[in-house]
Amino acid sequence: MSQVVSLSFFRFGSLGARLWALSMMGLARPAMSRVPDIGFWKLCGSGSGEGFTPLPNTAVYAILATWPDRDTAEARLRNTGLFNRYRAKASEHWTVFLSPQTARGAWSGQAPFKVSDSKGDGTLAVLTRATIKPSILMRFWGRVPGISKVIGSDPNVAFKIGIGEVPWLHQITFSIWPDAVKMASFARTGAHAEAITAVRAQNWFKEELYARFHVLSDSGSWNGTSPLRQTDKL
Image (cartoon, rainbow, N blue to C red; front, side, top):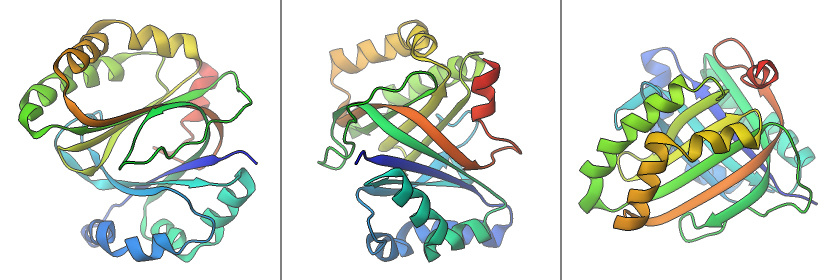
């Protein structure tokens, strides 16, 4: 069996729904830990604008989870009461299913993603996660908006968002690209490459993880469509 990662996004419209989603960042934890077959999981908020900003977006939340295989992932998300409540409260929801291709680093002291032996071609997703040292917060957030603008204007990115467990300190970037060549072209140039150089030289992070995934499938919609359709156009 090959591990499958699900990343679900939920958009909440009304004030009541947004307050409910915010409260679930704490209240949903016991229920999440009881979901059958679930492995590593995280409840996340999101950033505003292009996503990679210190300002929170109170309308968008995300749930990341690992599962033993694809069938189990799809069944648990479809039939578990907690995920059904999120979908019922949300004005829009979208889930992407991923197969880990490469992973290095740690997340909360764990190595959550188990790399598959089979390497899929085509559409891929990239996730980076870091715990930022408090002493360099201002320098970090001085860099990130520049990267955000570059990603937002890149014609090759099909989807991008910034999420996180704790505002300012625990940050995750997630993006989807039509292929590895286009993703690498972005990563090795401009503001992103400069930021990576600074991270390495100045040791900005207490903990970091980088993972690349083969995109298997998705369900639901985001902004009225599937972001994976954009990869077909690209």
